Structures are given as C-alpha cells and as structure tokens.
Image (cartoon, rainbow, N blue to C red; front, side):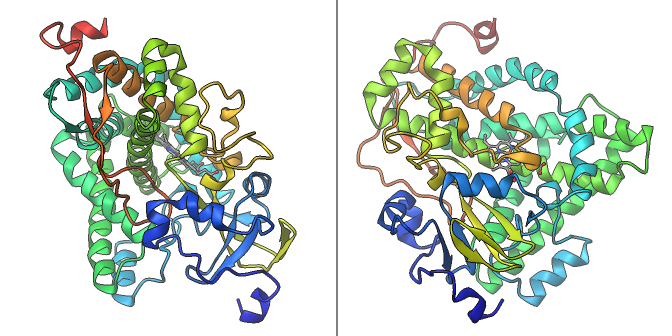
Length: 430
Ligand code: HEM
C-alpha cells in the first residue's frame, strides 16, 4: 500500500498499542481518542484501527470482503533467519483455522467442531472443579498469594492439555512454547528474539506432529484420538498434518485466553469489594460477572483482518490489502450498544452481545469451555475464600503483545479458607 492510498484515512501518528502507556491502561488511550474517528490509520503498526461495535461486527460477518489471513501474522515482518527457521519445518503463514478463509477454514472447522461437542465440554465440568480445588489446596489460607501462578494459569492449561491428550510430562514445555508464540505473533521482538521465538515455535509444531504420529499408533480417550477416528473414516477429509494444525490451535487458544479471563474477572470484582461480596452472597451472579468482564475488560482485546478490496468502513475509505486492527476491547465500551459503558454492572442485560469471542464463521470454538472454566474458578474461590481481597499497592503488569491481556500476577489474601481441614477435593466435588 502506498502513502497516497493511506492519505484519505485520518491517521494517529502516536497511537502505539505496544507502548508502555497503552499496555498499562488501553482504556485511557481509548478515551483520549477523538470520538469522531471510529477508523484511523496507525503508522506504528501499519494497521487501520477499528473501534466501533457496529463496524467490527460488520467485518466479522463479511468473510468475502475481509480475510482472516493476517490473524496470526507476526506483527513485524520476520527477519530472514527467523523466517527460514519457521518455514523450514513446513510452517505456514496461515498455520491454523483461525487465519484461514473458506473453503480451507471449513475443512478444518467442520471436523474440529464434530469432535469438540457441547457434551464433551459438559463432561469436563467435574475435572475442572476438582483441578481448581486441588490447585487451591496448595494455598496458605492466611498468607498473600499470587492468584495467577496458583490458579488462573495452571487451571486452563491443565484442562486443555489433558483434553487434547498431551502427556503431563510435556505440559510445562508446551506452556513455554505458547509464550514464544504470543511474543512472535502478537508482540514486537528484536531480531535476536525473533530467532529465539522461531526456534521454539518450530519445536512446538514438530512436537505436535510427532504427537499425532504416536497417537495414530496408540489411541486413547482424548480429543486427538477423536480427530484420528474422523481421519480413519475419510483420510482425505482430514490429514495427519491438519490434525497437528488443529492441536496447534487448541493448545494455544485454550489456555492464555482463559488464564487472562479468570484474572480479569477476579480483578474487576475485587477492585470494588462490594462487587465481590455481592457475588459471595449470591453465586447465581457468577455467569453475569464473567460476561460483564468479557464486555468491560476482555482477555482477547484485539483481532485482525485484511481487506480483500477497497471499502468504506465507519465512513472512512480503506484500500484493498489493508490490515485491520479490530479493537474488541473498545467495542465493549461503545455506548451505542452498552448504555453507561464505563460502569461495571452485574445487572447489565445485554453483556452477552460482547464481541469478545468474535462473531460469524470463526466464532470462538471454545467459548462455552472458557466461560465454564471461569465460572467454576469463581465458584470455587468465592466458596473457599469469601473474604478474599486484593493486596493493596501492587502494580499490575501485562505481557507486551497486542491481543492477549490479563494481569501477569494478581496478589490476593484470603483471610482464612472455609474448606481448610475439612473435606478433600473429591468430597467437595460431590
Ligand atoms: C475464554 C476466553 C476466550 C476468548 C476471549 C476467546 C476469543 C476468541 C476469538 C476473539 C476468536 C476469533 C474469532 C473470530 O475470528 O471471529 C477465537 C477463535 C477461536 N477460539 Fe477462542 N477464546 C477463548 C477461549 C477459547 C478456548 C478455551 C478454546 C479451546 C478450547 C478456544 C478455541 C478457539 C478456536 C479453535 C478458534 C478458531 C475458530 C475458527 O477459526 O473457526 N478459545 N477465540
């Protein structure tokens, strides 16, 4: 795209979603923007930023005009050495379904949705509950503890890795690889860091390829084996390589997103203790707390698209081949959809309209699982730590990337656990 083509779109030269100010508080940046500029060009990232709910929704619902191809593209062009490492192991620029357009997308989404059924998700509930309790059993109930390392990070990782069929001995390695993936795809690493991340992502992809080969010989009761059963029915419809790609989707999408969601819910409830107390007093408010957090402070803050042709979006001319930064977090603060959007309101009636899970053909496959995990985490916490409070004076930090946002640590104190010295985790499950 030439500078001339961009000339018709208003630009905001100092908008930088990886700046220190933005990472600390993106909402203050949002509020400082001119309200009559719903779409603008940001030279710092070479993306058009889209802020309004209606425009983002329209983009999601029109895959003929807006391609998903840039969804996982490294934000910065890769240095040749990093590119060589990645593509040398057969990596693709659109490595999994979330960045594919139809018909390639349909080919992967169909069998994945077939194996990832609501029944499978519902069956996970006792395991999620047991795991949350086991993780909290390790907490000293009267000492401050970091909720992220204790619960919000390990819970979804344990659930998704065991669901997929990754052996437990490899979980910590997989978590580390996913961190490299977030940094390379969604951050702004130096050339040296790019090479390091690329090496790790190549190892991650090769690992999944081997996992599929191993499972093909020894089937187990897990999602990878379910996909292999679909392959057996019609090997051309879903190849082993494609199964590796689906596992590449789920092992990443299934934990960072949910880790951050649980951290954000607990943070937003505890930052006004009356909110926390109302949920403790009435746990039926928990699903509303999760939805309102997805609107007010979503864990996936930005998603991306590419224009296939020139369009007018939000009244602004955008050329063909332009990259779009769909600011999901801003869409949740759109007063045209959510009255008094700055108020965190557990009684809000339309929080479910949030675009936090996307919309249309790529709508998040794990939305039900993510909400279930967050709800169970909150049920378990409010039950065991009704007097939970934030440790005052802590500075929250956030991973430097454009899309995944939740506190990297959240220090809390319980004031004594209700369940201590009582039942075991298993007993509590009944
Ligand atoms: C709980 C927090 C989560 C949030 C906020 C979230 C958000 C999103 C978003 C924004 C998209 C892109 C939608 C679009 O392009 O229209 C997406 C896609 C996807 N998500 Fe999630 N997600 C979450 C949890 C999960 C979990 C737990 C899983 C896996 C079990 C998962 C698996 C996927 C997959 C496979 C896709 C790609 C679907 C497709 O391309 O057809 N997500 N998610």
